[in-house]
Amino acid sequence: MTDTPVLPPPLRAWLGLIAALAALAVVVLGVLYAGHSEPGTADMWVAPEVGGVRPPWRDVALATDFLGEPAGAAALAVAAVAGCLLLRCPRAAVLVVVGATLTVGVATLLKPVVGRTIHDGHLSYPSGHTAFVTALALVVALLATNLLGLGGAGGTLLVLATALVAGAAMGWAQVGLGAHYPTDVLGGWCTALAVIPATAWLVDGVADRLSDGVAGAGRRQQR
Image (cartoon, rainbow, N blue to C red; front, side):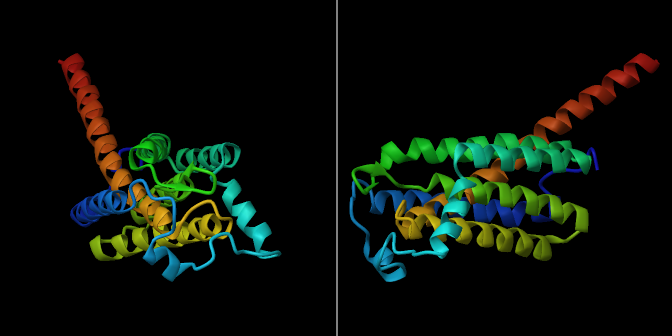
């Protein structure tokens, strides 16, 4: 699977549309909650009590939250890269590193721009933890789609379902621990949905050009 595109061709149109809608959602939510320091109406409807999780579920939330902290995130990324390389999918390994870095980078840059805060002025929109975990889940789902040979509809469904499960798990932990409002979590989820497909397209484009260059050089040497 060395030369297999990390973004399956049957999914490109669907994920391109989803990425565009996700980017729009990130912008709209950012504008709506810019400079706010209180939960919005949607936040109160979803989770009236931010930070209300209690033992033993608090321990589960803390363990989940750790996966978005530097040490936990690094361990997850290393495991994902190793898995991709074992499956001989170098493009997916590159996407893990570049995609996750860009996703977290975008989320980090958006925080001071939006200026939404929670608890003692901590910048909260969008949720970087949710963005990171969702980004990794998307890469794993794209890899699985390739391995299973799924078509456009099945592959898209698998990608979205995987991203939803991962984002919901981390989002629950972030809201339950009082680190984020529900709409922060949604913003982080959408950030990953916007960044990863675009990054996958770029990774494939660069890899294809490099492969063409190597093939062209080989043909010239044979002459």
